[in-house]
Length: 347
Image (cartoon, rainbow, N blue to C red):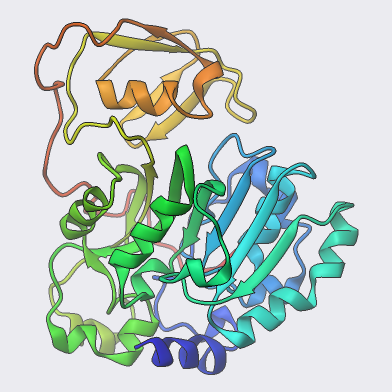
C-alpha cells in the first residue's frame, strides 16, 4: 500500500481536480485570520494540495511545528507565517514528486515572508527517528488527511508522542468511518488513495490514541463526507465517512474519562484571533469573562499547556465528585451536513 500511495499522489494525481471524491478536500470556509497567509502561497503549491482541512491551531507564534505528510508544502508555508521568524516548521513526506514541488518554492516563500524557517525531509511518518528528529523536539505536530494513508498507524502515534514536548499536542485532520471496513475495501487502491480505504473506525482510533499515551482524545470539528462517484459509492455500500479534526495532548496525568473535581476556568479573551471566545474542542467554547465548569482533563489541557496564561483557574483536585455530567460514548460525529451540500473545492 505504501508503493500504491506513492504512485497515486506522485503520478496519478497531478492536481486536486483529479480527485474522485471530496474526502481529501476542504469544503468549509477558511477562517478569516488565515486568509492573509494563504494569499502568499505559490499557486503551484496550492494546486498540488490534497488535505481535508487547514490544520492551524491557536497560539503557534514561536513554536516548533512538525507536519506529517506535508505533500506540496502548502500547510507548512502557511504555518511558517503563523509561527513567525522565531519559530520553525519541518515537513516530512515520502513522495518524491510532492517534495520536489515543496522544495522548488522555498526561495519564493522566503522572499514573500521575509525570513526562512521551513525545511522538508523525505521519509516515512512511521519512522521519524531515521530522519534524525529528536525526542521532545516539537511543540505541536500537525497532519492533514495523511495518517489514514499509513499502513502502520501504531508507529505514527507512537512516534508523534515521542517527538512532542510535555504539554505539546498532535492536532490533525483525517478521515474516519462509522464501522470497521472489510479487507476487500481496505485493499482497493483507488479507495485507499482517496483516503477512504485506510480510514479507521472512529472508536478504534480513539482507543489507539489512548494506547500510546494520548488519553482523552478531543474532537474539534467534523463533517460527513458525500461519496458522489457512483462506482465508489456502490463499493462502499452503507459505510459512512467523516472528515474530522482531533487534538491529542501529551499530558501524563490525563484520566481515561472526564472526572468532576468541581473546577472551572475563565477565559481572558487574550488569544490572538479569539477575543470573544476560544474553542478547545467541539464541546468546549469558552466565552471571554464567563465562568465555565470543566472536568479535570480539560483543566489540565489548559493549565499544563501553552494556553495557561490566557485563563484564570478556579478549584483544585482535592475533592472528586464522580463522572463529569454529559461525558458520552456514542458516535461523536455529526450524522448530517449542517448546511446545503456544495461542490467539493480545495483551498
